[in-house]
Each structure stands twice: as structure tokens, then as C-alpha cells.
Image (cartoon, rainbow, N blue to C red; front, top):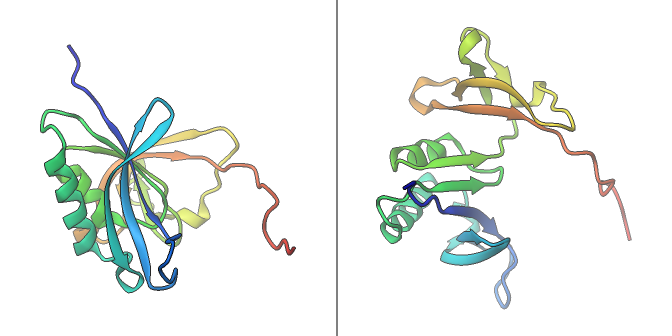
Length: 162
């Protein structure tokens, strides 16, 4: 019998009814089930602390307490979360799928002397697996993982005005 593997989607939402959008965001974890997203845990976060690693760590710890300890959780996160987030997910014994962007560096295990910037690597329309490696050059912040390159076709929405 295989252990149950719940899949959670964690993201920041900025659309808040009756609250100024600029002041708060919602950090939310939702269970992905039968093509639907069922909200499980939400936290109101001031915009100034949106990427605060302590708030994110507390959120993950609270989510961890809500889940069966035998479950092998898979967390899906959008871009914007940093390596401390991914390291904490791994420390809980969970797996993750995350999108990385910006000036973050990574290296592949088969070429561990060559550090690449995410912005320097070009993905293609179909996913490509270059291999396992390390995310973030600084040793104190490093996180191991598997890298996939993928670039979706542009949707043509940039610089459009109504």
C-alpha cells in the first residue's frame, strides 16, 4: 500500500474585497482535488512582510500540524518564494515544485563548478531536464533539487492598453 500524497498549492493572493490591495495579501494553502482547489489554510499578511521568511516558516509549520504525519506532501508554489522556503519544505519531509525567476543562481551536480543564473538559461516549449543540482550559490542558503527548463509561449499580453 502506498502512502497518500496530498498535493497543496501555496500562493499569495492580492485581491481582497473591502481591504486596500496595497496593504495586505493572503498567504493561502489549498488542497488540489479532482481538478479543484479547496482552501485549507489562509493567513493575512501585511504587504511589507509578504516575503518574510519567518512568517512563511510559521505558515508551513501550521500547515504541517494539520496534515497526517505519514502523508508524503507535495507543495506547488509560484515564483516569489526564496530558498529558505524550499529548505523548510524539505526539512518537513515534503517535496515541492516551484518556479524560480530573477537573478537566482544554480549549478548542476555533474558540473558543480559552473554556476548559472536563471535569467541566462533559455527554456523551450517542451520541458527539458538538465539534472539535479543546487539552488543558490551561498552555502548557508543552498537547497538541493531537480531542475526542469520550460518556457511557455508568450500570450501576447505585454504592453497592451485598453
